[in-house]
Every structure is written in structure tokens, then in C-alpha cells.
Image (cartoon, one colour):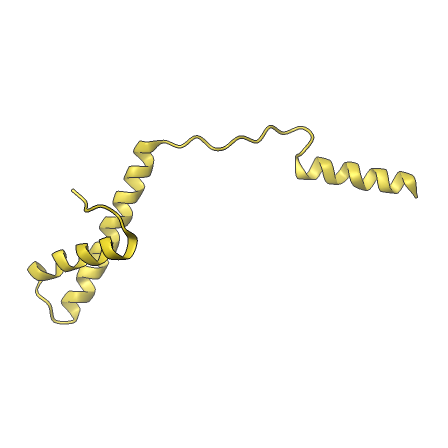
Length: 80
């Protein structure tokens, strides 16, 4: 009984990685983060522009409205 409990405890410790792993936080790269944010913003705005145009807005008026919607929805600064 004690052997099986010890075996289960050791198996759990090894499987969970608490004994031999040194987990550290992944390194963040600000350039990659900015690129991902900009890509997300661009795709979201483009999709919203298409929705507004499909709803009857002109392309010239849809883009500023979509940008404003994005800033309001996600509290991101305006893109370049």
C-alpha cells in the first residue's frame, strides 16, 4: 500500500514537472507584439468596413467609422 502511494506521488510529481523543470515566463518581444496588434487591427477594420459598405455606407465614410468602432471596442490607439 505504501509503495503504491509513493509510486503514485512520484509519478504525479514527474508528470506535473514540478521536480525537474524550471519553468520561466516566455520572453516577450515588443516588435512581434506590435506586429500582431497591428495585423489584428487592420483585419478587424477591413472586415468592419466591408460590413458597413454592405449596409449601404460609402467606402470613404466607412473607414473612419470602422476605425472609431475599433478604438471604442478594444481601447487601442489609432493605427498609423
